[in-house]
Image 1 (cartoon, rainbow, N blue to C red):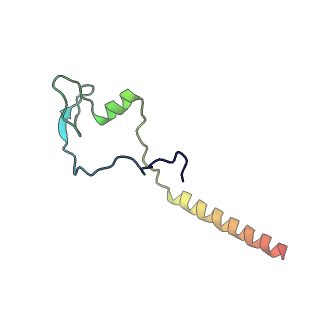
Image 2 (cartoon, helix red, strand yellow):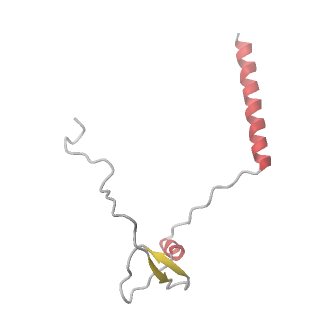
Image 3 (cartoon, rainbow, N blue to C red):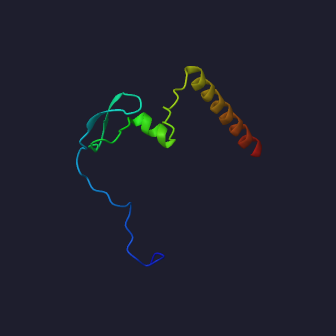
Length: 94
Protein backbone atom coordinates (compact mmCIF):
# COMPACT_ATOMS: atom_id res chain seq x y z
CA UNK A 1 0.00 0.00 0.00
CA UNK A 2 1.45 3.41 -0.93
CA UNK A 3 2.27 5.90 1.76
CA UNK A 4 -0.87 7.68 2.92
CA UNK A 5 -3.10 4.78 1.95
CA UNK A 6 -5.45 6.98 -0.06
CA UNK A 7 -6.56 7.10 -3.64
CA UNK A 8 -3.83 8.41 -5.90
CA UNK A 9 -4.56 10.03 -9.26
CA UNK A 10 -1.89 10.08 -11.89
CA UNK A 11 -1.21 13.41 -13.55
CA UNK A 12 -4.09 15.52 -12.36
CA UNK A 13 -7.24 16.80 -14.01
CA UNK A 14 -7.09 16.41 -17.75
CA UNK A 15 -9.94 16.63 -20.12
CA UNK A 16 -10.10 17.23 -23.82
CA UNK A 17 -12.27 20.25 -24.47
CA UNK A 18 -11.41 20.32 -28.16
CA UNK A 19 -9.63 23.13 -29.99
CA UNK A 20 -9.38 26.43 -28.14
CA UNK A 21 -11.19 29.44 -29.50
CA UNK A 22 -8.68 32.21 -30.08
CA UNK A 23 -9.59 35.90 -29.84
CA UNK A 24 -7.70 38.60 -31.75
CA UNK A 25 -6.38 41.42 -29.56
CA UNK A 26 -4.17 44.48 -29.78
CA UNK A 27 -1.41 44.52 -27.15
CA UNK A 28 -1.78 47.29 -24.57
CA UNK A 29 2.03 47.61 -24.28
CA UNK A 30 3.47 47.43 -27.78
CA UNK A 31 0.37 47.70 -29.98
CA UNK A 32 1.11 44.46 -31.83
CA UNK A 33 -1.85 42.35 -32.95
CA UNK A 34 -1.95 38.86 -31.45
CA UNK A 35 -4.35 36.09 -30.46
CA UNK A 36 -5.20 34.92 -26.95
CA UNK A 37 -7.04 31.72 -25.87
CA UNK A 38 -9.72 33.62 -23.91
CA UNK A 39 -12.23 36.43 -24.31
CA UNK A 40 -10.87 39.54 -22.57
CA UNK A 41 -13.15 41.45 -20.22
CA UNK A 42 -14.31 44.83 -21.39
CA UNK A 43 -11.92 47.56 -20.24
CA UNK A 44 -9.07 45.27 -19.16
CA UNK A 45 -5.65 45.63 -20.74
CA UNK A 46 -4.45 42.59 -22.68
CA UNK A 47 -0.84 41.84 -23.55
CA UNK A 48 0.67 39.88 -26.42
CA UNK A 49 2.62 36.76 -25.52
CA UNK A 50 6.01 38.51 -25.55
CA UNK A 51 4.90 41.45 -23.37
CA UNK A 52 3.09 39.10 -20.99
CA UNK A 53 6.19 36.96 -20.53
CA UNK A 54 8.35 40.07 -20.10
CA UNK A 55 5.98 41.43 -17.42
CA UNK A 56 6.20 38.13 -15.51
CA UNK A 57 9.99 38.00 -15.83
CA UNK A 58 9.92 34.83 -17.93
CA UNK A 59 12.67 34.49 -20.51
CA UNK A 60 11.50 33.23 -23.89
CA UNK A 61 12.79 29.83 -24.97
CA UNK A 62 15.85 29.93 -27.13
CA UNK A 63 15.68 27.79 -30.25
CA UNK A 64 18.13 24.91 -30.33
CA UNK A 65 21.41 25.93 -31.87
CA UNK A 66 22.09 24.22 -35.16
CA UNK A 67 25.52 22.62 -35.29
CA UNK A 68 27.77 23.80 -38.05
CA UNK A 69 29.49 21.28 -40.28
CA UNK A 70 32.80 22.03 -38.53
CA UNK A 71 31.33 21.21 -35.12
CA UNK A 72 29.85 17.97 -36.44
CA UNK A 73 33.19 16.82 -37.88
CA UNK A 74 35.01 17.79 -34.66
CA UNK A 75 32.61 15.71 -32.58
CA UNK A 76 32.93 12.76 -34.96
CA UNK A 77 36.74 12.95 -34.78
CA UNK A 78 36.64 13.14 -30.97
CA UNK A 79 34.40 10.09 -30.72
CA UNK A 80 36.64 8.13 -33.12
CA UNK A 81 39.68 9.03 -31.01
CA UNK A 82 37.98 7.97 -27.79
CA UNK A 83 36.92 4.65 -29.39
CA UNK A 84 40.52 4.03 -30.47
CA UNK A 85 41.76 4.82 -26.95
CA UNK A 86 39.26 2.37 -25.45
CA UNK A 87 40.34 -0.37 -27.88
CA UNK A 88 44.00 0.20 -26.97
CA UNK A 89 43.20 -0.01 -23.24
CA UNK A 90 41.34 -3.30 -23.64
CA UNK A 91 44.22 -4.77 -25.67
CA UNK A 92 46.71 -3.73 -22.98
CA UNK A 93 44.59 -5.40 -20.28
CA UNK A 94 44.73 -8.73 -22.15
